[in-house]
Image 1 (tube, one colour):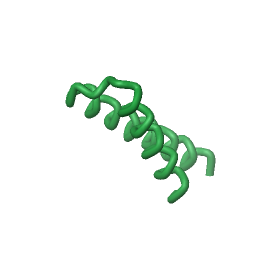
Image 2 (tube, rainbow, N blue to C red; image 1 turned 90 degrees about the vertical axis):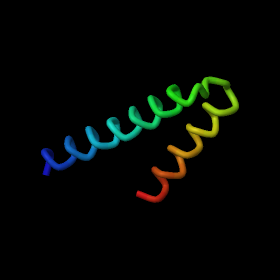
Image 3 (cartoon, rainbow, N blue to C red; image 1 turned 180 degrees about the vertical axis):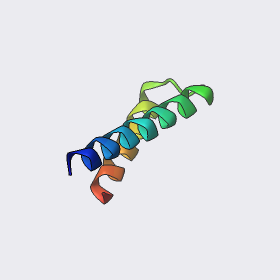
Length: 48
């Protein structure tokens, strides 16, 4: 059971990391856009 939890946590961190890298690549570093990104993460967590 613990093994599955570790895999889920690693996947979540990887997805969030990729999203952050994507936003940085797009040149979006303004606070407003970072807030939108955080809101997207929060919404994603609500769905899971």
